[in-house]
Length: 130
Image: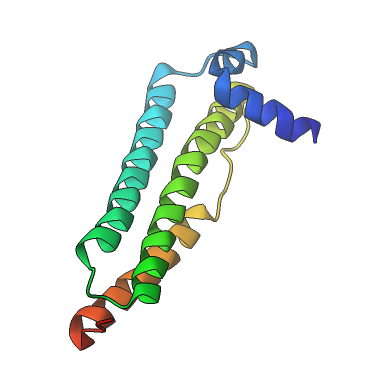
């Protein structure tokens, strides 16, 4: 539990990350920040897609529309949270001279987006109206 608390503390006070280890080459820190921003852009796109599904497909059966919208919105929220967590973990690893952390999140993200995309293709092709 202490590790979780420390991890969350680093989310809201990233200056503490600088207290660990040695300062890495700034290019690596900037690359880590660009990756963070890419995850945030992905999160915003997923949230926008979730709202678009809900607002612009009113003729879609309610359960299907809400399920797809909620899947995209939840994934967007998870992606935003994962972005800051991944940034902190990578920054700490670089400062400590450790290997960068491995994550399954990109796989999960891809699978859920793929499932929602297939569902949308089915909806477009077969026109599941409410």
